[in-house]
Length: 102
Image (cartoon, rainbow, N blue to C red; front, side):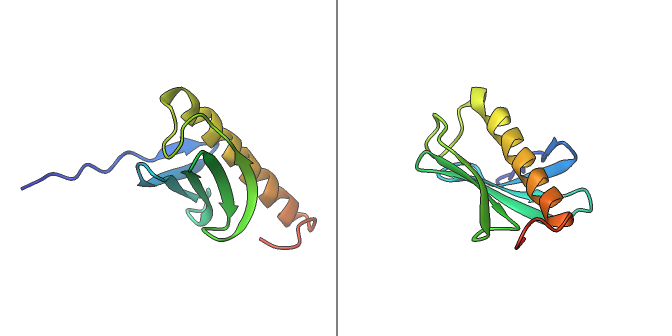
């Protein structure tokens, strides 16, 4: 019987990133401090996007890393951290009434 190993979630600035697909695309569901889904991260065809509150939502950050469907090891943490910071900024703007949608 095969053993399926689930990767440990990443914690960045109090947000939990659950890897939902390892490659092509590399993607994560992101949960906030209250354990509520707040964002969706995806790297596909060389484009990294951060959408809130989930897939198909408002894109609050995008970038073009070296990796195509999976981050290079040396860039993963940096881009994921920038994504979390964009989510935090979006939530802060939404909470003070500056945002028009979540």
